[in-house]
Image 1 (tube, protein in one colour):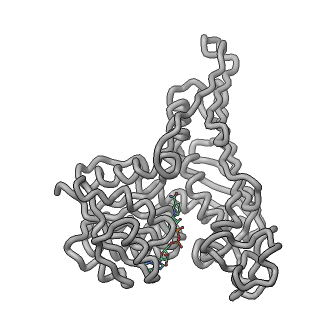
Image 2: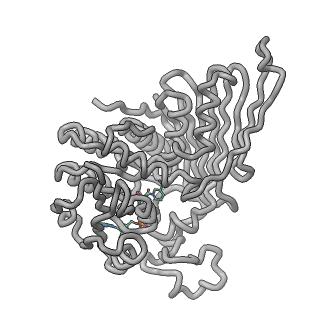
Image 3: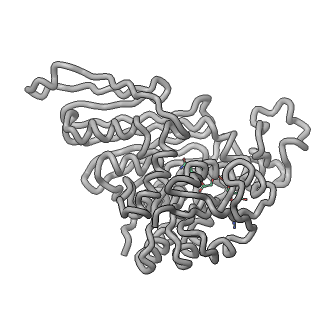
Length: 378
Ligand SMILES: NC(=O)c1ccc[n+]([C@@H]2O[C@H](COP(=O)([O-])OP(=O)(O)OC[C@H]3O[C@@H](n4cnc5c(N)ncnc54)[C@H](O)[C@@H]3O)[C@@H](O)[C@H]2O)c1
């Protein structure tokens, strides 16, 4: 095979990454798209792949001989159904994060990939960001010693933009937004420390969004749309204060990793700003990033070596492409996996363990903070 022919399931906001796969003269091309909303099919054809096959039934896409691999860009609760069906149809699969919304869903997908012998990749694009690759490299260099503590603060200033105006805000679609958004961060903790989470305890609640507005209320038809602070500025228009919203927007998780590291993850959806602040503390120093400043700071402590004489600031060079340059690179990694069997940075098990940790933390939140063990695949 010289060119991977890609079919896409789900032509929503994330489908913009498909442009990185549509290179008719290169090693990948988008040949088809399945999407239940016809206007999104039309837009996808206009903006991404003008000659591609379109359908509202993803099963028709999977029957096609001109599709070698499928990118699953549908809502989280459909990943299991779509990924399993694609693998069974003989297609390689790129599945957006989170891999699924339950441990069992992830295990089902991974088992099907093993049985069918098809490639499966999880869309952990944060692993491809220069900032987090730099942080991984610093820890692996040993300059801050053995990691013992990790503290992560996730300021989700986009809560009222992307997560409470549509499907994201219901448990049945995501399990929780802690899992939905946190699957990236939990994975980065696992990746940089080289250890999965063993057990968690968590607290969380719905403190800002949700409420008693009718479930069918939309921003354009709302009487207070001119003064409401959460009036949707774009296409996601369901009221952010509607009654059916049942996921938390303020979460605190403490985690013990399998190698004894203590970690914490704090996620809040009504902050004014959007960024992630990670601190890794080791036996010889500590590392912290600032996304707004584009920097990683390393401070060293007494170690009876030359390393204690200097601190360092890494200035992350900007990169072209979505998500700080990560999207074009992760898309190419999927093509290299299919064409050359080159293993990508994240494994399917990584995808599964981040979901399992998010599910365990959600269970803890909804059971008064009790300690919950994170499951391992059987
Ligand atoms: N890695 C990242 O940085 C990143 C960023 C954004 C989203 N995502 C992930 O991408 C996925 C999609 O997110 P989004 O923001 O694009 O959501 P979205 O709602 O904008 O898009 C999902 C699309 O899937 C369509 N769909 C629903 N059921 C379908 C079906 N049965 N067949 C075909 N299409 C169907 C919807 O109509 C919608 O257009 C999510 O899992 C999300 O977590 C990842």
